[in-house]
Image 1: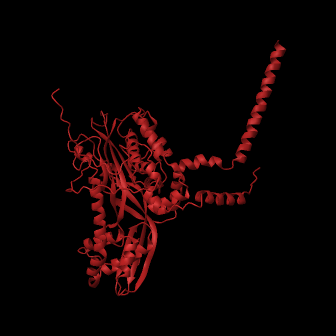
Image 2: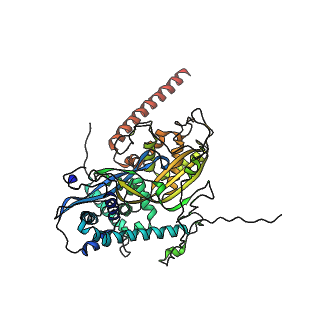
Image 3: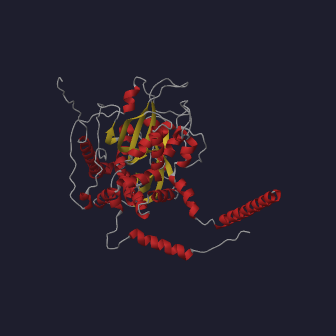
Length: 160
Length: 368
């Protein structure tokens, strides 16, 4: 999978957690969110597509017994793209599903995030709203599931 | 002499056109949309993803629509599609202990940390058809309960502390995880390959086999230790980045079956386990998978192999419904030449049989 641009994106150990979290959010954005954020992005950079967007598969794995040795569970569709901005920043994106536009835009935002001048704007106007929506969904699911929790009670029987 | 015969192109073309018409049905009704199938026939979509062995709700919905609701045909379509795509890699194993839980029950412990969470279940419904669903009535929003987040440990970990239950399954050191989509199966299999085959196996076939173990054919005294349904994160390591990349989340159903085990020459008495993990909300399938997984461990655990469900080659060779339907349904295809040969053979045997009969009766008459 190594390709022409892999060396163009040196990823320092320090920044990885931040970029990992940023890319995770971009992967879970909807295509509509990506389009809206891009539509509102001022001063759009020049974008050159280095790879894709292209569809492929990943083989997903489980663990025997839940925590043991890995086994192959089944595949999922994945879309990926790599772009280069006019100033040279390279962005990657991978996401489950087959939305090419979402992944192309996600790669652009990944590239923008890596530039100190744009990082804060990406975090505030793109990543934060995605994180908020994901968190709201999770809280909804959690509260709705919690309402189905069984509260056991013991019937007190009389002496007879 | 072999004579190749051509023909039927027009008939086939017209048959497929007719199929398209019948699939659409009454034009005065609105066509069903993929989003409607994904949202409202979600468990059909889940089954197609599980047995098609491809997680993609929209593609599975398209397959259901194209197959007119024929599940095995839909699964076949999904399997065919996946062969057209390159593979980007193998993900990290999903961590079901970190699942965003939507349902979680245990039949072995009443009061377990995290509690019994029923979720969106058919259990405890009265299985009475609901005429209100025939109309597009208003559906109430679900109840909510906001509470302090409680840790929800896996039941098998709770039991594991005192050695009463075996550990999660390990594979021998240095063994590469088997992949039946890359290498043809060769028996006997390791447990990883069996689980891969079971995860994509036909729900009905595995359900029947699981039921057979309960009825005494390879009895294994099972308890549903835990069933959990929810979303897990998918992470992939890629060459261009030096950290595992989150690709998104998928819904899975996990079943931990716990089985009584009186011990054998190889193992002390303790609880053993069968494991089920299936795409989507597929409780019946994950339970059947777990029961079959346990039954198929007979050899490993030194049990007598007496029943069909314990026979690895039998179970795994016949669990794939695309393979099964391929071989059963190929009988529909022209076998004109084969049958002609058989017909000649039967005629010849019949002639010989009649000749022998008449010779016998002549000998008998002469003797009299």
